[in-house]
Amino acid sequence: MSEPPITAGPDILFVWVPKNAGTSLSKWLMPELGMLKLKTPDAVAAEFSGCGAVTFGHLDVSALVAASLVAPAFLTGAYKFAVSRNPFARAASLYHYMPRRKGIERYQGFAEFLSILEGGVDPIGLYNVRGWSQCNPQARWLLDRSGLLVDDVWRVEALGDLAAHMRAAYGVESDPPRSNLGDYVPAQALYEDGAAVDRVRALYAEDFDLLRYGRDPADMDASPPPIRRRAEIA
Image (cartoon, rainbow, N blue to C red):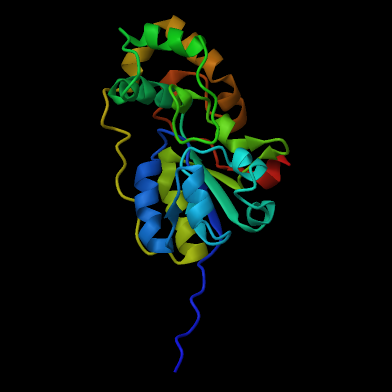
């Protein structure tokens, strides 16, 4: 008797914004959904069949489509989601994270870090990471020419909501593992200087606008705003 045909799982795209618990979420969904993690154009070309659950890491999804590595039909039919983070908390996380990367110039203090960002960072593109590209606003991964690229933007501050959705819609049985979001010194300490607050507001203005986080760092520990849905923006 012949073996039954192997069927692909649900078409799902996780758009992985840097420093938003993506490592924890990919480790959670890879065994649950058979999600592929393809972080280079060569890997996408060789391993992505055009269906199933996948994340392309920090690659620019629009650039993958333009390069004919991902079909527009997949984006049309797949459930596409991302996870956002309070811009103040994300900036603090990037500040602590970037010195751990090879080839990154060292800086002395948060003010100097912000000065580097204000000087401009590498754009996102057909690469997982280039220079300071991880420090781009979250919106650069979430928007395309038509508007919001994904169907839902969940909140890293409320991952239980994402877990409940994945359980109800796709039968995911486990909860996401603990992320490393709280492993750094409290972000609030970096914003005692009002100038730093204004600079982060300016650097990530498009994230505050798109994701509707409060512009006061004192609100970082408050309940996050509701998820953003493509249907409500279109």
